[in-house]
Image (tube, rainbow, N blue to C red; front, top):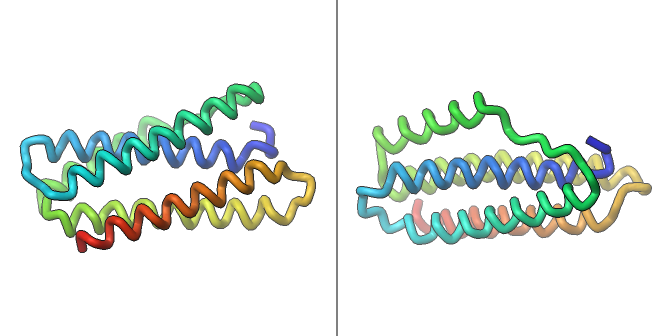
Length: 147
């Protein structure tokens, strides 16, 4: 991966993992009557859009796309199943997602700060990352209503 595309790759990987997690969570909640399901579907659509857009930009620039490993996905899937089995309340689900999105947004901020120091880097990617970070923050705020 060309280091000029690290931010874009991060957005793709973070979005891909979020999509996987949300799809798994919605599947586990399918037979349950949680009020949070509607917002989870909305968040999933937004992450799918981020994933699609970042993938297109990477492909346009002939970048090798690295997806999260199967082990990461398997561990996330097992964690979701365990959490839902123990407590499938809207508050518990919101809390779990807020923690995950917060970790992703911290990674985004770290990458942006490192990226911003290199004045030769593509400013469009930095702008895109700032929008992605704003999306993550808004998503956390939406989920806080369920705590």
